[in-house]
Length: 387
Image (cartoon, rainbow, N blue to C red; front, side, top):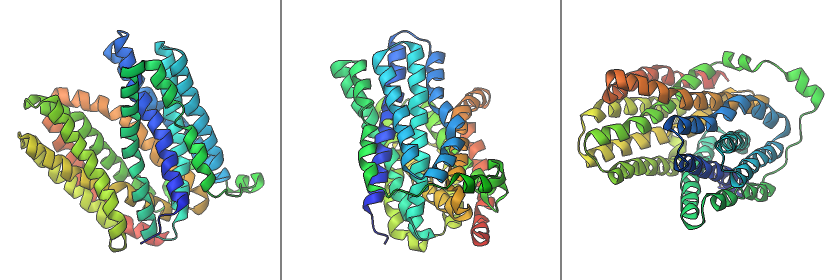
C-alpha cells in the first residue's frame, strides 16, 4: 500500500484548517441572522452565497494552481478566509454576514482546488491516486465536525463575535502545514501563453464530459438525500434526534468506505466502482420511500453512504488520468463549478418538484436518472485507456 507521506498529511490538515472555518461560519452566520429576526428567505440567500464565489472563482483558481503550484493559491485562500472571519467578528450586520459567506466559501474552495491538484501529483499511478484521494476525502468529514462544534460551543460560552474570531484563526494553520509541501517551479509566462487554450476545450477530451455527468448525478443524489430525509422523517413521526442520527450514520459510512478503499485499491477499477455505486444508489432510492422504521431508514442511509462515499476517490483519480498534466487545476475547477452550481440550484428544484409530486417521488426520479447514468459510467474505463 502507498506510504502515507508527510506532504499528504500536510495537505489534509491544510484542507481541514480552511474547511473548518467555512463550515463554522456557515453554521453560525445563519443562526445569528435568525436570532436578529431575519426571514427564512434571507437565511436561504446567505447559505447560497457560500457557493457563489466558488462558482465564479474556480477557473481562476485552477489556472493559478497550474501555473504556480500549491503555495500561491493557498495564500489567496487563507487571505480570503481570514478576511471573511474578520468581517463576521467585527460586524453583525446582515450584509457583513453575506460578505463573510462569499469570502469564506470562496477561500475554502480556492484552497481545495490547489490541494486536490497537488495531491493527485503525489501519486505515481491510478491505484495510488485512489488511495491518496480516499485519505484526502476524510478532511471534509472531520471539518464538518470541527468547525460547527467549535462555533456552537463558543457561541454558547462567549457569543457570536468570539466564535467568529476563533474561526478566522483556523485558516492560519494551513500556512504552518504548507511548509511540508514541496514548492513547484512556476510555469514561465511565455510558456503559459503558448499552452493557453479556452477552458471549454477540456470538455472535448475523451471521457471528461461523461465523467462530469456521472459526478453530477452522484452529487445531486447526495443533495436529494440531505433534502428529502428530514421531510420523510417528519412525515413518519421521527424525532429530531432520530433524523440527526440517521444523517450522522450516513456521514460515518462515507468516512468508513474511504478508510477501506486504500486497502482494496489494487483490486478496484474506477469504472466498476462508479457503475456499482450508481446502481446501488438507484436501488436504495427505489426502496427508501417505502420504509417507515427509523432503523430501516438508518440502514438505507448507511448503504447510501457507502455507495456515495466511494465515488470521490474514483472521480478524482480518473480526472487526473484523462487530463493533460499541465491542466489538472482547470479540470478540477470544472468539477468544482458543476458541484457548487448543482448544490445551489438543485434544492430549489427539489422544493418545487417535491411540492408538486411529493417528497418520495424525488427519490424515484433521482434513482431512475442515476440508474441510467451507470451506462456511461461503465465506458469511463475506455477513456482512461485512450488518455
